[in-house]
Image 1 (tube, one colour):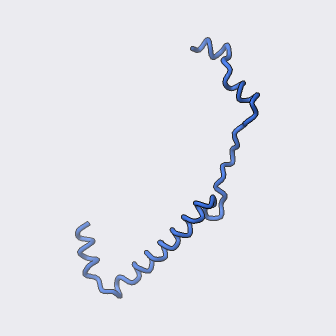
Image 2 (spheres, one colour):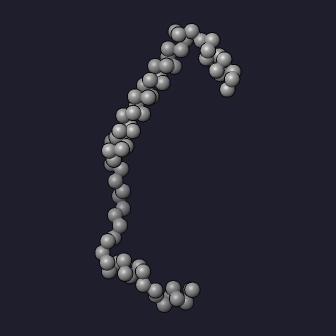
Image 3 (cartoon, helix red, strand yellow):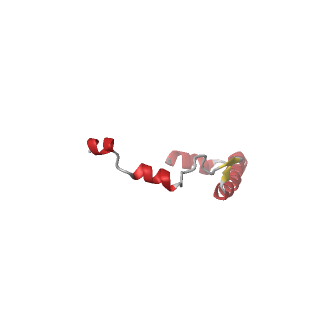
Length: 74
């Protein structure tokens, strides 16, 4: 890492310019994508889950009841 830092420090402004431009573009892209992600979308995709949990109490009670198979297993 020290070698990279040493080489970077020895570059002229003209030599650093393309790297700094790329870094600035990436920073702007990151900022845009962060805002989109916080809003719930990322790169045009909706981030809401595709699977919805069943909230019907009948299904919940069936899942929670102890069946004979489960009692035998225990």
